Length: 170
Ligand SMILES: [Zn+2]
Image (cartoon, rainbow, N blue to C red):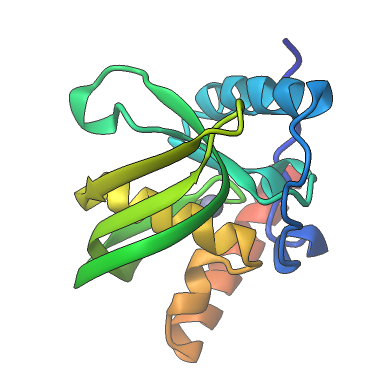
């Protein structure tokens, strides 16, 4: 299966709200297969469709994080239906390589969506997995993790990233 190119935060597709998935067809199934492959190849635990240049409202995530066993799932048209207890913890993003920041997220969330068969699914998550769900949900809305920081902190992060980007291109 071909690996997909993960776009970085300079790409405007990451700033657009993803479009609702209306049809689950062969193309979508192939896309999600490749996204899972790409996520693991990049040592990520979650990947939103717009991160591979497709503005569709879905993401893939490894819900086996805590069990240290791979358990990739695809969540189509997800919504967070419950959340509680804000906590700060470090976070990174495959579209902003090598930049990490402490971000406030809910410790517990409930998420609902659909699988590839069009059947409803629901997950309750806490800790790191809950954080990953919120991070991917933000991507689908065109939000990047550093948007949750103060303006000053964000501009420091952005400068760090620009420096990194130059090193990566050089
Ligand atoms: Zn991300």
